[in-house]
Length: 330
Image (cartoon, rainbow, N blue to C red; front, side, top):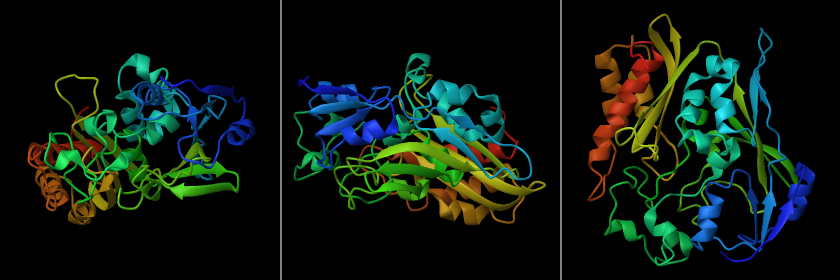
């Protein structure tokens, strides 16, 4: 690992002061689960590493008729989010996703902000021997190489899949992500926070090198029922092969509106608007859920080695809808 300076920032102001606008020169570290492996493999070689564990760790879920947003600090540990009783009750899909990340050891170190901002797990990107598109190279090696875990949506020049487990249910719940930087703060809808490779090849979100995620705000909507369903190899603690979140606004057992988002199938969390249209105005049954899932994968374009993912994510969407509607037990 290349030698680096370490800045122990105790608050947001100090952390921002230690970052710089040049990409890759100074990077934040919270749990370090992703950053340290990138540094060990010389994918990132920063001159300065800035501790941001001093960022907010709040989990606030207001109650009552005036309750508008729940707030989760970026430095909140995944284990704490998963175990928070009020949060689990209000946002089961997000809490479930947090509870499924890695192992207990990882969840007790990993943070909400880190999970959202982690880099792709593509083995060509992670291997220092391959100079792929995301590292300034001329091509995506997955196109003609081993692509069994790569994208089936997006038709991008780089075929990564986004690795965040929390991003998918946060988009389904229409969350907003607070970003701070030298110019002040802004709130970015979660659906707009993540960007496709053709828009930004060297990063996966809208953050500039000297900006930080400080909190996530999630609208409190008592009529929304949500669930996440993940598909993995056996009981592996690795990243899911594919997963989906369904957030249903229902009157009785009839869907008024919905947000269906799929994960591990595209360079960004992938919203299935065709599935949402297929559900609108219908009573949830297994046949209706399967029809929505068929619509969700209708435009999938698998690569040479990942055609199986179409059926996997179809199943994940079906079961997420049924689970959210209370027709499938956890």
